[in-house]
Length: 320
Image (cartoon, rainbow, N blue to C red; front, side, top):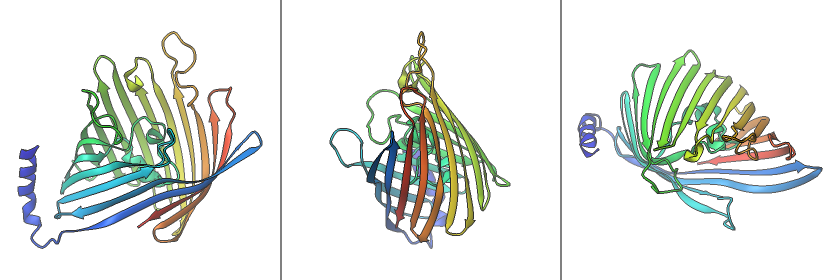
C-alpha cells in the first residue's frame, strides 16, 4: 500500500502547482414528525434520526480527506443517542482512477441511493433491511474504462462502521456500472464473506434518470445471512420521482422483503420482519439547504398474525 501511495503521489505532483489546499466543516441533519395508525389508535412522535457532523479537506487536486461523526438513536436499551465514526478516509483521484482507504462509504448501493436522492426520508433497500451498512473499514479502487463503463473492486472489514474487526473474515466485493447511455444507468454488484458457510450478496439495479422524471428498479438477494446455512433473504424495490419545478418533487416507492424457510421448516426464517412497504409523497425546498417532505407509508407484514400499519410523516433535511 505504501509503495502504491508513493507512486500515486509522484503521479499527481504535476497538477498541484497552482492549487491552494483548503477545507470546510459540514453538517447534515435528518429530523421528522410522524404518526403511526394501528387499530384505530395513533402514536405521534418527533425524531432526530441522524446528525452528521464532519470536516472535508482538499490537500491537492488529487488528494482529499473526510472525517464524519454520525450521531443517532441506536434503538437499543435506554440510550437516546450515540456517536459513531461514520467516515474517516483518504481519497486519491486522477483522471480515470479513484481509490479510497480507511472508514469508507461502501459500494453496494451508492448508485441507487444517489438516484433515489431521498435518503433523509428513507434508506434504499439494502440499507433499510440490513443486507449491509453504508460504511465500513476497507479499501476501494474504481477505474473508468470508457465514459460508459466503470468497475470497482473493494475489500471491506465486513462488520460495518459500528464494529471493529472481530473475526478473521473480510468481505471482498466487485461492482460493474454502465451509465450515460442516454439517461439510463445499470449496475450489478456481488460480495461474499465467510469460510465453511459463505454469506454471499447480489444486487442488480437499473434506472432511467431524466431531468424531470426518474424510474428505477433493483433486485437484491443474500444467501446464508450472518453465515448461517440456508438463511436467505431477498427482495425488490421500485421507485419513481417526478420534478415538475425547481423546488418541488413527487415520489412513490414499493419494497417487497422476503426470506426463505430453513431446511426442514415451512415458515420463513425472519417472517416477523418480512413484508411490503408502499410510500408516496412530495418534497419541496423553501430555501437552499432545507428540504421538507410530507409523505404517507403503509407497511403490510408478511406474518398474518401482525396487522398492517399506516404512517404519516413530515421529514426535514437540513444541510450546511
